[in-house]
Amino acid sequence: MAESMAGNALHAFGVTKQLLTDSFNPPFETQIERERQALSACAGHSEGKEGLMAFAEKRKPTFRPR
Image (spheres, helix red, strand yellow):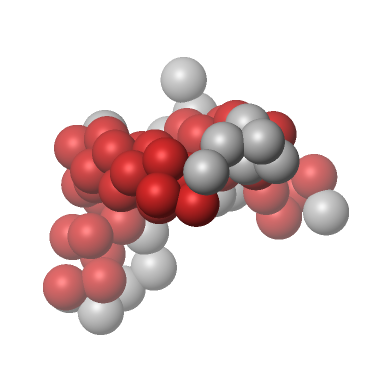
């Protein structure tokens, strides 16, 4: 499992983990807003840009570890 995750967008995994951890107490509307902000931030990140370009070009994304 770790090997398959290592080749993916690690930034997005971190953001998702944080969203999940913080999702138990806030109101629904607050959580949806946090997810909207996170999605926007991930799309602007270098990994997000690579993922979107790969999708548009119908190829597998290449994420580079930092």
